[in-house]
Length: 448
Image 1 (cartoon, rainbow, N blue to C red):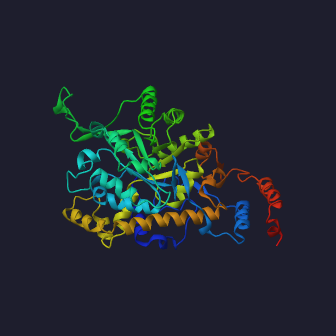
Image 2 (cartoon, rainbow, N blue to C red):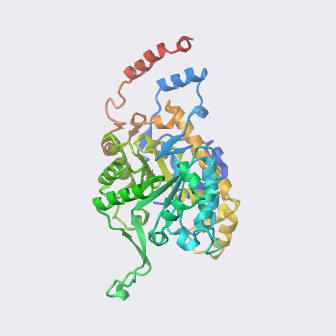
Image 3 (spheres, rainbow, N blue to C red):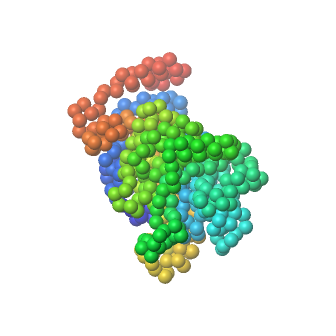
């Protein structure tokens, strides 16, 4: 399944105005089938937290009063969204512009592996920005206390000792001291070089091109790598990104025990998603986060894969995630904001000679498209959270969702919408809130 490019382009073009046709709470929310379609957001009539907010504001709360601020892995973010490492030619062209928008919007930004060996660490090796240019285009545009830069180190980066260079680079030192940089272990599929490599007995029989394969991990290797990085780089935050594997519960357990600051579960599985039938569905990845919460694990966790709008972000949070990591939608939004977006959209996926030149023009308007797209998600989250009677997104939880599927209800331990008594009376909870408010300084407002 691919992303709904038409919808993302529309948001990039129109911004919040793209929501004027209505914001759906349930299965009709997405123009394409999403893995969260069978999970519904459930607005209640009784909203004690709205009452609390009204007493605080001395007026009826509005959607603009919803706070979307969260803390993820020690980073303070304006929205529960991080930008996954963008890849490919389009990302090469748009990288610095994406970084600037992410900084302005106060969300975390990721730099993927092997940029420094290919583009240069500080001086450019090609006509594209070097690693340091990309990193500083984000860090120098941060506003206030929001944001954070996540840096991966690939096989080629290890030869350059990338993390060591960053850690000792005086240009990065102020940001390290402010806690704005994280090093991210990538425990997932990687692209190896040409399959016809020197280690094969019969290179002629190998598959053409490149192929995906995992780095070797055991429980001891993962734990040891985390301890080593904690020891060598104590001043930076430590993140882990992993794919859709069957032993995610154990991965989360080990990473949390060893003290990582945040874990991202990539439901698309990077390169493993190209292997039909060889991955765990993204929904099951999210259920691993949900089970971890039930076991009392408090480490920040993010989910990635086929998520692109406000409802999917809030559903993920309700089921245990702290934030959502967006990759491809960010690239599409960059292109969708251009006046040439319609033509670019038609040529995407084709080997068109005109696409390359069009991309160069479209990317110049990248900022507008991505800003519109992110603001549309922000408004959507606020409207939906307000409908749920919650005025901070991190208060959204399992009581705010139900399932159209009995299997999903069992998987996440949430309400099954068609079950008798699927909506238990919550008057006891509401009554408890009201009794507490009776003794507040503004209790008289309750009786006006």
